[in-house]
Length: 166
Image (cartoon, rainbow, N blue to C red; front, side):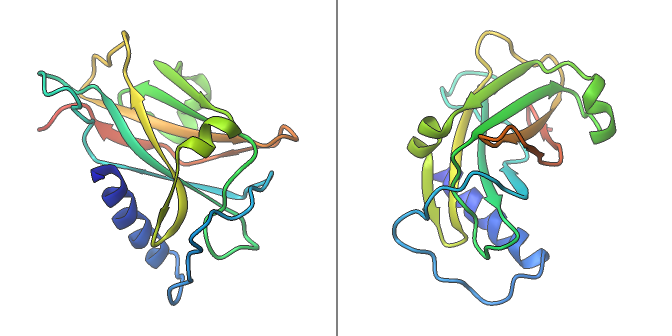
């Protein structure tokens, strides 16, 4: 529930910042999935999550909203969403040369299972566990890439996240 609350607050702030006026009514059922998107918004807590109560972070709770220019609300998708994790803070221009520490891929069927409704629209709540490869740095960079069935890709700006509290 905390991940969705964070997703909601972040999404509402983001929508307000980009100039969306007035609330659109979010349908009680998800919109029909689309193949192409124009933009991705990654919403993450500023610090990595601790799910097991043991010392140290276990991964990231992330919300992802995908948008098309011809729609006012986020869309659901038929393609694949790829999340890449890098150690340290990596600038967008340095990403092509950087090597990801971990990559998670979610196809359309997996994404349908992660779909949820918020007042901001329909989006995906992802839990990204470190697994056996934990970051050794005090911060990580997360990126998202959507791959449409046609092969066209759309990238989200990188998001820096602390791996432990300050």
